[in-house]
Amino acid sequence: MIPDQKTLWLLGGIAGLLLIASLVTFILKRRAGGAPGPVILNLDARVKAWWVMVLVFSLALLTGGTGSVILFALISFLALREFVTLTPTRPGDHRTLFWAFFVLVPLHYFIVWLQWYGLFAILIPVYAYVLLPIRSAAAGDCERFLERSAKTQWGLMVCVYFLSHAPALLMLPLPGPEGANARLLIFLVLVVQLSDVLQYVWGKLLGRRKIAPTLSPNKTLEGFVGGAASATAVGAALWWATPFNPWQAAVLALIITLMGFFGGLVMSAIKRDRGVKDFGSMIEGHGGMLDRMDSLCFAAPVFFHLVRYFFT
Image: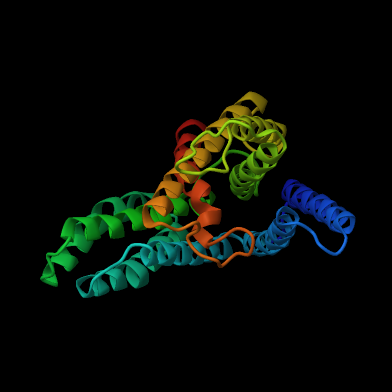
């Protein structure tokens, strides 16, 4: 797919931000001499990981809808794997998990690719919620049945259904020239992920008061306010790439920023319950796939339905 000029400007702007981040990291490492501290090393690992993630996302986006759907299907598969790994299962769950991973995940994203909204909206919340507990019950294993079923269904909802609303933006009949849907996906991912980064930066610079010490000790009120305000400002400044005017872009950016923050808190609660710091170690400096996608999981469905209701 040949990208339009606005899409190229967006991707170029992201590359510019990463170049600045790489330069800052390089300067900090040089100043630290031969023994940079853990904060600088973590920052360096995060920036390098961001380069890889942005490159993969850009290549998928430039291939059109097919590449984006395949990418998010793979992300959902890996995120669900991390989620299930933290929630112990029994032999009676194995065939249920087979259906979840190898039938429902590809089927759901195939429906996204077909742009079949009616079935997309109900496949997992209705049919999967009926099918999976039936399959588990048929195995005859009743020990902790409710807890095991809830874990599988909840993981499927968050890691697959919620997250799939990001590439589903490509199916919306938006007004305007070609490429508007791709830019909308970039807007969502950029604002949500930039909010995470800016909350981290503001927290390191000004953070004093813990906002949720038992869930996420590193999150501070100052970091949250600074990051949310900064990401909202960036979203408003990107109105030209979306179907929104500046105030609409600001409101939607604020909403998805808040949803991303609360999504991170919810997923942190799960990690604390399981006694782990991260869902995995797949992405250096970030943790697992679900650690990087947790905010997007909660922001994507809200953003999708707001756009679908008000702008299509």
